[in-house]
Amino acid sequence: MSGGQERFLRATMPAADVVFNLARRLTPSAADAEDLVQETYTRAWAAWIDGRRPRNAAPWLATICLNAGRDRLRRTATDTEVPMPPGLRVPDDVRLIGYDDISEAEFMVPALSKVAPDHQWMAEKAVELVIKRIHTPLRQAGQYIAPFELVIRESTHRSATRPQ
Image (cartoon, rainbow, N blue to C red; front, side, top):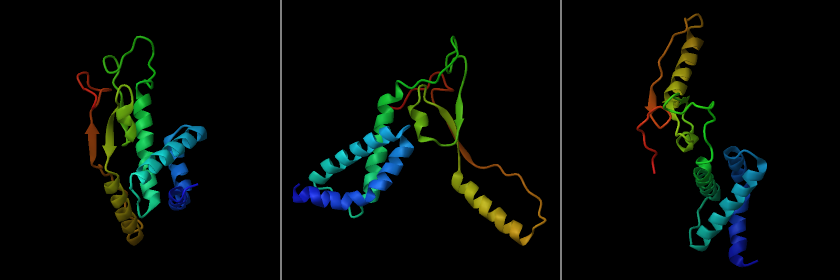
């Protein structure tokens, strides 16, 4: 093993668990996660050879893993269609919309429209309400409308085009 390989392994192997845990969340099985980890380290090694050497390997490898996982999802997106009963088509006969801001929505076929709530606002409001409840325990609960973003894609709009 060359000195460059040893330095690479010394710098990157402490982050192997972080990379595997991220890969496991991005893939359906442990075997797929192992493949993604291998792809991540292969890309990292190529970058290392080109002279890109981060100060902190964990976030660098996590970014490479996330990008590799997204690339895999894009390659397989055309094979992953929303199952529909025979004769029904999205969005001509049925329109679908998801809730929450899942990154995979744009890669589904058809691309899934979504309502993306403002999680930061909801977290801040929850903390505010807990503090108010501590100070006034008999306070009545209230109703709040959280800000959100509506993202229209192919699953709800006939003339929508997929981003390239």
